[in-house]
Length: 332
Image 1 (cartoon, one colour):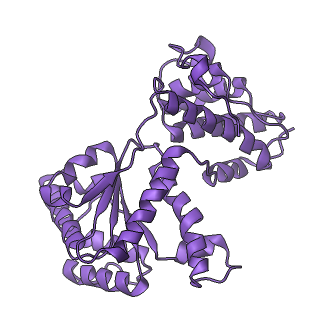
Image 2 (cartoon, rainbow, N blue to C red):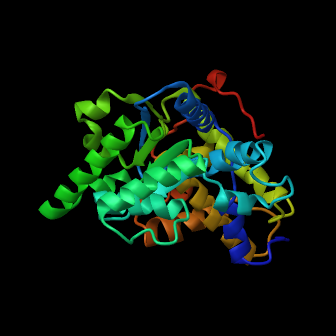
């Protein structure tokens, strides 16, 4: 029988679920390097980019980094007592800022968004230049080592006025890099890449993170996707939602989840979450392929129109599995 007490409990478990995979580990190493470079390099700072579709896992990578790397670092430096709740440290640490730009970004709003992340009590009071200077001062005072600027596609704008404001904001970011405030990670959708083609930006780019869709024809990508599905099934039991382990590593199930998700881990995770909801409603001991088929119908097709066929019922359009001798099956 399902052990979860509510749909809310299932959603919370999935929201807090962190599964390690190679791309995530590589991103964390790059974040570490950027933070070290801040103290090793005088003057202008570098940045890296991370442009990928929605649900590719960009924000999850940042949250995971703060939880696994920044929180222990804060405790080791004595910034928080060892018995401080992780949530409290995440909410109040300022070593790594995760700043989400609002949908009409401007020079003033960029500074305001950074001030908000810093906990400034009046992040919208003052002119753009005044807010920006306060952001500089607070970053230095609080020892900020890295700023992750999310949703940078909002700098593009939809009207001439918005685009003008966005251009002003882009120039502001260039100035922040030139003045050597802190390194940046610029995150957004693939369309945002055009914003950073300016040579003054390009000269300072230290690299990019690969958080694109997984490619089923790539053996390493397929293996990573398969392991991710397998580990999710294990965690449903380990986190106390179901009595028995849910197995999602058969070739058929992986191929179907891949087709529904388009190779995006965020969509794969949400599909399994809605399948878990169905299994909880039926009060069964584990999530099965029938629940995944139902979630595809109810959530992926009817609600979001992600596709117009159900591969769990009609079979995958094509077998995605690479040759058997190239696959190393691992559930944990």
